[in-house]
Length: 277
Image (cartoon, rainbow, N blue to C red; front, side):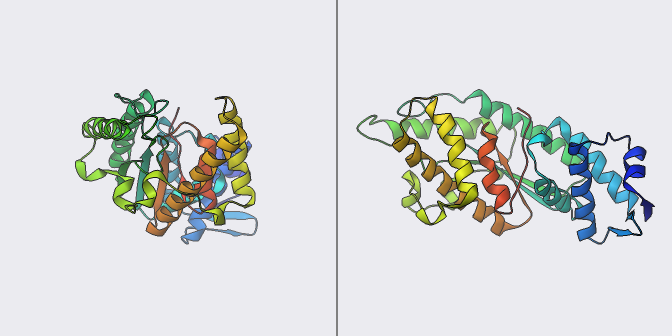
């Protein structure tokens, strides 16, 4: 153990004293304290320097992959705790490629770019000898476009989009690491989705609604349509968050670019990490 005050610690590691660095260091020291690797005595931080440096240097290396400005302190604390215990299960969830009434016959740039980023994440974690699992899941439940009147071919289009996802992902991942949410949530009610009114309350829900209202109004949606879509989305986010939390040692990797919606996971006690956009 070494002992330093906050100013000495920031000076030793050449850290600018700002809110972002305070967030990171506080999260790291809290995770270390939880694991008996740090404590405060007589206004000094006593900590295992080797563990601190290993995790802090890995944190910096992972800036190539993650954009930490989206993380709150709890995200980072949970992430550092999993690194200390050398056991992380990443779940990356990809949305289908939607058209106005069906599904695209190609993969979007967001999907292909982020699959490649996940490959780079694997390389860093392997080089640093981190014990991890990384699973890519295609979200083929709670589907937006499943109206036979508007598009009688939507199921065939979805099957093609799923196949394109699988074929591309196989260039970077073993088949055992690629799957579909319908393999986990296989009840017929999950395909088109539903609304669980019991979860539609509280600050978390209100913030989720506020973001979606701003987003969907730009697309010309009316308030009724926005609320229906928002409430289905919030329901599935809660379902997936509860599932991931039940697994333990799990970090959620949102593959959509609308990161504001991911706070549902953090507030349910699931670590969320955000790829660079």
